[in-house]
Length: 286
Ligand code: GLU
Image (cartoon, rainbow, N blue to C red; front, side, top):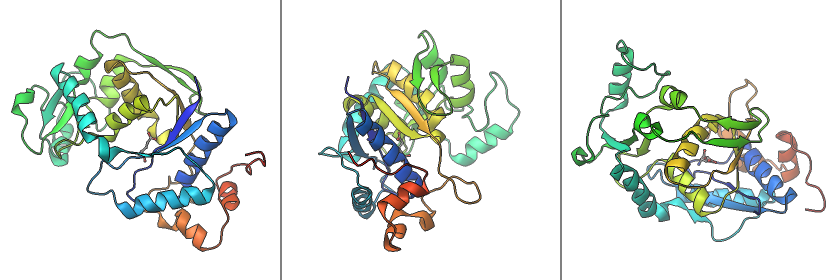
């Protein structure tokens, strides 16, 4: 199978050094194995995605020396497909509507807990018994984790990243405790969460290797479970280290000071960016 990977930014702000590192690592891995590199625009967050950020992504990546296959998949053009998959899960009784706001969840979490132990911030299950027929505009849709893990054999995935190398086994009790009833359908009708859209696209685009930051390591367990529930293939995962600021904090979109566009404007070269993120110069044969 041809090594196929992707870089999947959300156009909600400028690309910074952390994005550059992620895109370059994926691109280098694809080139080194004679594989394919795809770009996917994850623009399902209609409140925050902007056309000008998307344009800037293309410009910055081209400037960095990356090339990718056309056409680029833009998730906003596939909402009906994602929603149809979500409805399949709903028909199987694996999804329920939830009207809880953040403040409701906080209040429920601060009350004494009963039943199964839950990790910090994991949804307490307030709406779990609601049928799909009670869905109101503005309700999110959540995965019923306990039901989803019941009666299936737990999948494994292979990890090649520096921190968690090797075969990783999912564990039903840990999925319930640490991930719980994740939101799959957002409160805006017909908008699914990135977690599900990305699983559907990784399969439809034939992604064999997902290369991304280690901040998404835990999400992988949820995504591998979704692949099992939807009968989709599980790629190999490579969670790379994160690029941090001088204080050791992970870079975020708001860290405009580290935006690639800013470095470009100051006269940095693509090679300088590679050096800044600790990558070797591009071999001349590329
Ligand atoms: N759109 C996601 C992000 O920007 C991509 C995560 C992934 O590569 O799966 O964080």
